[in-house]
Amino acid sequence: MAPTPRGPATTRIVDRARWTLTAQIFALCHLVRFKIREAVDSALSGDQMRTPAFELSTIRPLLASLTRTTHPALIWALLLCRLRFLDEADEEIAFQNLYTARASVCEVLAIRALSSYSNRPLHLVSVLTMCDGEWRGRR
Image (tube, rainbow, N blue to C red; front, side, top):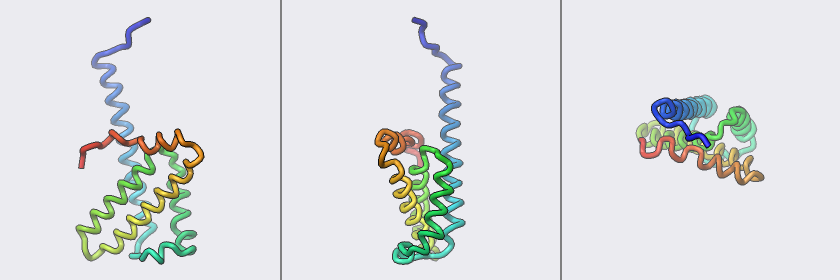
């Protein structure tokens, strides 16, 4: 049995693969953020977000366009954007209701996207642990 290659070339390949995955996740986070900022442009209450009109006009089209990406880190990107919108809500008091509404939409989209994995438990575990080590400890 031949030994596995070790050395600078193998390290560069692993680093390049890790960088490519990180770049894809970074682009996905920006895509999610852009689409939600574009779709939710007014401060909405929880009751307004539960209406069928909001579901049909905002949630379903957003979910359809985001799940077309089929990237396994979509759930992670949605939750990351939710946290970022909540941070912005704390920073900008004048737009706090708007950013809170956007954060709530991110949460609802993440829950709906997770429900598509309910019949495939191994894929669900893979999706939920996809980005466990990508940006651990970075803020």
